[in-house]
Length: 318
Image 1 (tube, rainbow, N blue to C red):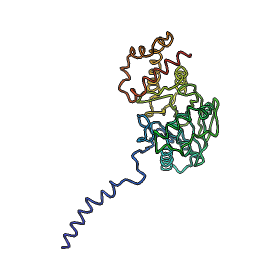
Image 2 (tube, rainbow, N blue to C red; image 1 turned 90 degrees about the vertical axis):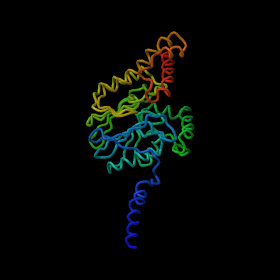
Image 3 (cartoon, one colour; image 1 turned 135 degrees about the horizontal axis):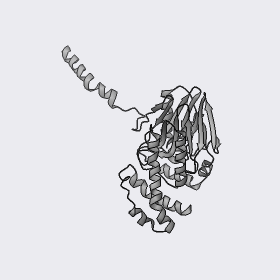
Image 4 (cartoon, helix red, strand yellow; image 1 turned 90 degrees about the horizontal axis):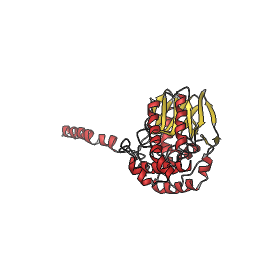
């Protein structure tokens, strides 16, 4: 009789206990995980999904990064919802015991800033470019947040707010922390009026924000495509070893990977310029263009036509 009890105990251990240990999710598990990727001795980033923002992905569609210094952590961008910012803060604590002291905003687009309030709560100082003030006070920002509270619920909700910077930067700013320099430069208007890039010379790492996209169609929106092309030249002059884009994998070959964003923008301008200048119908110009090189890439169908139309309109106003 005793051997039967032992036998069933063994079976219970083999089939029941493992399921208790491995199959039951933690109460906080929701299927969206942030895994920091180390790209330099003290630099890490988390890579957003190549998707449109949804409630299912918590608006985790952009990248954020951080640098650990002897006197604290500097974060670049805050992700697209407060829950994601909380997760990023938790992941940073797994990497270092240093306090998060600063967050630099590459630009005030929703997928990069809706997490700012969580960093503010823990005492981090927020840095952004002056033009961001215009966005924060705009009807566009207000309506976008209202829509996001529906589109990304419950992760973006009535408690989600737009967070202003503590320090507004004009053209150049050098932040030094623990002997580590962060060279912050305005490169807009480009992708956005308030674009900033952040270069860390000791790491040879550049945080490019949405000036660089990898692995998906860029989002042009109301960008200044001519200014954007100029900004890409500014990045190349720095000759970084690593570029962390606003979307997609990090680049260990910046010259090659910057070329993708540049070529796409140039092609938009080439295919839209004649129609825009002659006031020819946009639909005809779009249909005549050959999109073979880009068709099939993530977000092509969601973004490409809109990108082309925005460039068509912007060229008319140049």
